[in-house]
Length: 84
Image (tube, rainbow, N blue to C red):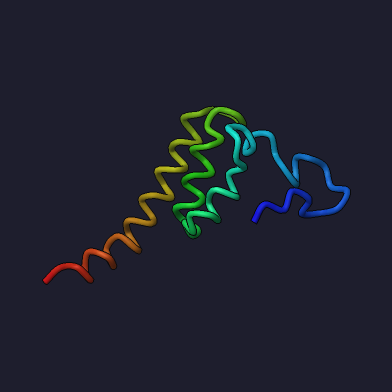
């Protein structure tokens, strides 16, 4: 879904924040196309904006935090399903 006007008349930092729009695809469009879900989607979000809205290391740490949460929840569930 590539609706570029989510809120009519809203500022660009609401509809298309510049820190999520570079590289030819808006981050939300990528996350939705890949059906990444909350944890992985947020990890991608923080990685894609690393250094554009503060310190890159903080964004990467936050991405790692979301990945760790995914591993703790979904990763263990997947391991349990595949372990004989």
